[in-house]
Length: 474
Image 1 (cartoon, one colour):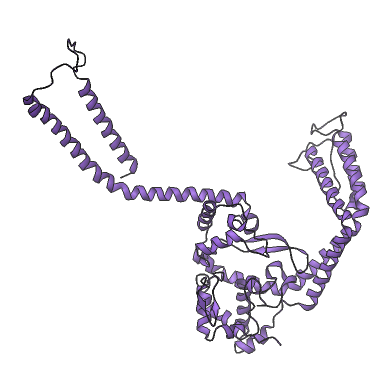
Image 2 (tube, rainbow, N blue to C red):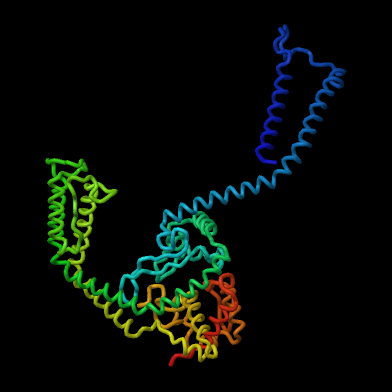
């Protein structure tokens, strides 16, 4: 029975009882009395011990009977009421968590649905601005428990774009807000079946990244050269932009003229804006405006005045950026040049490459498919923490398993830390527990996630065999 029915019944009972007592109290109140109530003789002993007592006892029995019925009925609905309250509180907490997720821009990096994304970051070794690969968090509860996830939210992840969000770590959220955010994260977790179906996609993507790394780095070198060119060109571009801001502002603010298409911009201004923007387009590397005085929307969906104002806004932004570049030209040029040297060295060394055949012969009895899959699994699920620079992109990736947030796994460390293969498999399945020992002299910090819920033991075994078969560095 719904809790609202119980509340209604109890309310009606209370109202009925109050009405009864009120009727008794007012009974005979309309009679004229010659004697003051406090001087009037009360009932005799015979009346008190018969009619009056019978009436009082009858009322008591009635109320006791009512309570005898209502209390069990109320009790029967109590569990449903508690469950409804829990469900209600969970729903409200999820709503608050969703608001926090949007307010603090979590989806800007991790994706609106938590499926992963990217974040801007300045890579520390090179000083180059990169697009940092932000992990998916719609599967995070399969790898970490609540307290571990809370830890990452509170303190963030140093040397990455992930900031601290908890007050204790210097962030803006209190414990209650963090709890709400956790509830929302839990709410949009994908099913385990979906996560397992993503294994092949993740492995193939990791292998494809290795194959395309050379092209990616060459593309970054082209962009870095363009950045150097832009810094060198800034002093000559700045006066042009400064003049353009004044000219375009004046044309937009023109006070007299004919506005044939009634788009808020005079015909003469549209013609002059189109001509002037074309004259500086090549010097600034911008697109010329093409405004038609007879069309309200030269670009469908946008009025000409809006187009002109957006063009002016872009010029004003360029004026600010070029001013900064000119003022700090030597500093920016050195940083960009150092970054170019780094990228060219990265292309020459190609540390991201692996020799699949060598791995197959050494570890998997010549099975090339197993060798490829083991590398793909490691890069897809382990490299973020155990390969330096992996999240920053191919150009910044050091030797596979070279260490980062997690320890380096090269130089035979896997065999030193774990005497038995089974021990290492179990450790990867379950992850580390803060303060609990693992392997030989290992002490968990709670940061190593467990992968037993996202990878089958056969794939975990391939990762373990790959690492245990890795040749020590010279």
